[in-house]
Length: 80
Image (spheres, helix red, strand yellow):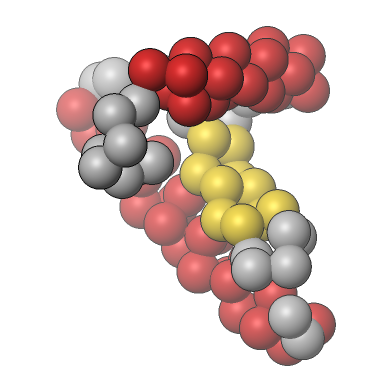
């Protein structure tokens, strides 16, 4: 993926993150969130309000969910 496309995705995710934060604040809701886009070549673009340790915990949790889903998924069911 080209640098210009990555930069555009970064801008889009920043806009989404800003809107999400504003809407949650309006509702008086304080939740942790992560917005992640993955390019076809594996570049991860992230916007979040959590720290590095929480991201590590989330990564571990996602790995566990992924492993469980892969072992329990019926043959005709999509991955997501």
